[in-house]
Length: 263
Image (cartoon, rainbow, N blue to C red):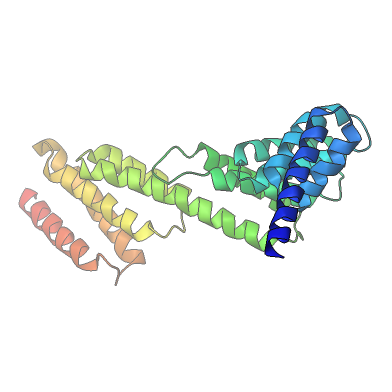
């Protein structure tokens, strides 16, 4: 009985392969479309994609195009080819803006760019595109079924950009490029006022100004120390009991001592 079942399975397998090849090599577009959708629903996306690549251009301008284009784009998405998925979802929305699947397509297109977003240490072009697409989805579908997830993804991508901006500024600080570090921390604090790294940025901005001052020519020391004291007061205003409270106090005491000697 086991041998019979195995034999039937083999026959069915090769029969299925043979049927697929016949349809794939044939000229019957309707048959290709039907088989492609069947394969898609069975999760056989690679086989389905080969058929959709053949038939999608041939259905352009026809009533069936909307359905074909959706499956074509989503097959790329299911295969995690997010570059082509994002592209095809965009094409779909431009062609069928009033589609019943517009919301789903807009979200999946945006999420494709979310998946393409690299590590914070790399170029963030795809992160910017992902943020733009997700925000577009949120604005277009304020009551959308994916709204909560879209907002969570936006927060995640923004946090990644915040981290990159903070790390860049901090690298300038560690390389003793204090002027550039201060300017970078200023930009960071303006761009991300509620950032997780805000306290750290305020502290390292203070330390950069302090180190810049004590390493300056005599004629520049006083003004730069006074600026550092302003940065100290700004840190203490928001983080009196903060992570760097002790360090800022030590810096402030030394600044005041140096200013007293100058006076």
